Image 1 (cartoon, chains in turn red, orange):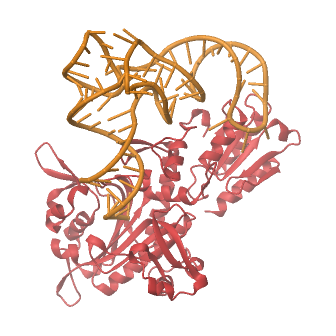
Image 2 (cartoon, rainbow, N blue to C red; image 1 turned 90 degrees about the vertical axis):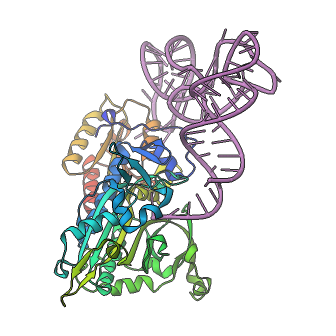
Image 3 (tube, helix red, strand yellow; image 1 turned 45 degrees about the horizontal axis):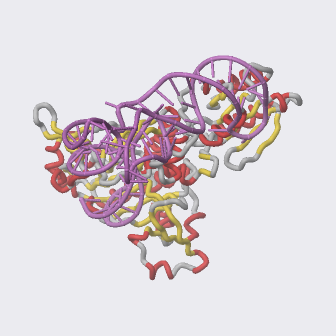
Length: 443
RNA sequence: CGGGGCAUAGCGCAGCCUGGUAGCGCAUCUGGUUUGGGACCAGAGGGUCGCAAGUUCGAAUCUUGCUGCCCCGACCA
């Protein structure tokens, strides 16, 4: 993409409404624009990251055996009356009346709808296990939206719903999502720790929050440092096999948010391994049994000929919120420093002197990189060097290639690694190969 | 939902106390000089001062109501 033809409205000054760093940087880097309290338009750069994050989430859900569908944003109030949540949900639910005076709502979640879909088709235990998921916009009319996309009213969420014939099998489904979550966040370069969670109004008895560690996180967390060195399950994980050893490993170490914190249990952890940190919740998994299936009559025939309500679980990931968490975890004074797996572009190509001898080198590199599948943002604008460097540092592409008259005298370009600030002079061919390898290395 | 604050050009702000027909920096446009870390000079365009009433000869400025947004707290993916 040529920057001269792109839409990248960078702000030089800090918008006053943005208090925390991720919000500020997303506005400054031209990723989002607020349209209303807690409601954002996704500008081209922000959308690219959102789509990459979404893709990783989808791939790992599918790897774990979940099947993707797409449910609507607008739902009927009747469905929610069946579960009893229409009245219970309160003002957080955005209620809408259509032209026929029918009561509708903008979905804050989809348990009722997925249960309705399930009960419409599935009759037998032979069709189980089943895990259906979608990635869709949700709306919760928060009293006080804040922190940009970290706590918006409209947000993109992945929600998966598992259906099993009994609790033991439901637990296996839960374990599959647990492992999928470990992989999902790790692929984004995030350290996300599963922590025992309060099951809250949704009900149930088995629940974990996945918390990303970031110094600017909203909640305080306590953990055993040993948990940080646990291995992430590989791509070759057998999701049909028994995963309980993985779950046991991750849940046997102390890790809790301040609400669930048990000071005595924490004190039992080796003093040298006690860690107090801050974190951001990016995922939440629940087993809630037959709460909805019972209320809504979602039953299957068992092998013994009886009918039982299905055991369900739900598994959420805040996709749009993850962008905030990613920036909180990956930035410095100059701007964002994207991990390779979610960066809007892999490399920024800076032409120091458009209209001069740098043009053919830049054009060739641009073409070769794109052909090799490396995503390039080519700064071909005729502006000052300082402005180009500052823009690139702000938007945080992992690599920058600087092509200037100075380096070209010795046939070299500069390759800068954004996260470390490390610079090296290379031939254009060497830079090209290095970038192709870097893209290949992260899949 | 309790407490506090803000609303003036695309962005950041001054002017308001003490009413007199709107200003600064950045950005934008034109010309020139510059050119390896957010340049300089000269000029130009751009604002129903959030909305509505009221007071007044006259309101960005005073009064009342409304709306929007932000911050702290309680609550949450």
